[in-house]
Amino acid sequence: MKSVYLDNAATTPLDEQVLQLMDEVYRKNFGNASSNHRYGTEAKYSLNRYRSRLAEMIQAKPEEIIFTSGGTESNNLALKGVAFANRHRGNHIIVSAIEHDCILNTCKWLGNQGFIISYIPVGSDGIVDTGILERMINPKTILVSVMHANNEIGTIQPVEEIGRICCEKNVLFHSDACQSFGKIPVNVEGMQVSLLSLNAHKIYGPKGVGCLYVRKNTPITPLLHGGGQEFGIRSTTENLPGIAGFVKAAELCQEEMENEPKRLATLRDQMIDELQEEIEGFYVNGSLTHRLPQNLNFGISGLEGETMRLLLLLDEAGIAVSAGSACSNNDSSKSASHVLQAIGKNQFEARGAVRVSLGRFNQEDDIRWFLDSLRQCIRHLNPIFS
Image (cartoon, rainbow, N blue to C red; front, top):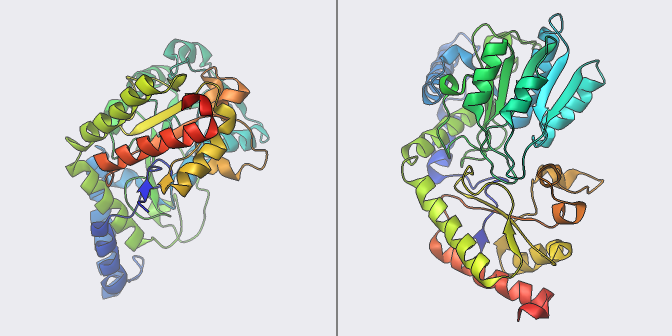
């Protein structure tokens, strides 16, 4: 049976070139970068080289790159670290209503520590209203956090405008760019961010590694205390093979940045065109213009209640897609997508979405297999489509 992986927003396959480099680092560059002997100095040299290369890709300085275990840690470090370092200035934090669960749950925890959390609404297209944001900022506001691109509906936010507003208001700005990095250009200077979260496993790199960009002179309190690694902001022995894989994966994405997004957008638009033409009640969630090129999130009116059965039937056909964020599957309450509810979908519709996320290893025949299988599954679920 043909196997087609179309859930690249959840995680991506490890690129073979990344694996080869990581294997080499595991075997030959195993020293602790804090050690003073030859093995340690070689590891330190490599660590500094990888840090400089990643910084260069996002127009940052090497000392502004803090390696972490991934996006969740980076987001926690950004919000908690800034909140506690700036508590003397204020206790108000603003985030968008469609942030990743790790941001929203961090904010919930911070709310129990005495911080005031405000949520910026989004329109039906999933885009933040910057006018509302500007009015929400007050003298007690210390941080704004808005993701660069949404993990469920792929909506790209106007981060440059948000950054400008935050700079004018003297408020720190954090953006979660885990979904956008490697797919569209990310430039910390153009975005005017104070902090930026990145990770490796969404760009064909290893799981368990990421980074937080922290602009020079940004006050931040560490979450981990120990040997003072990562400029004292994130103590623990650095995961050099993972960092090597992260940077190699990022380099490969940069090399393909000119052509790969166009290729994926063409495949995605092909899916949209065929589904709109052939399936009554088909609709797309989120903006069609300000959207990551590989993302399609859709529903079918009248079949929203059959989404889980549809996903299981597709899985039996060898096709992996999702109903939304992978992390949300760990929610024991099984609540409807907060992202879809934020763009105006009711509880029923918010449980009935299908997310298809394309990747480097998908070709046109994968899309054809998906479309043919989807039609068959829909006919099985609802004979009216026969």
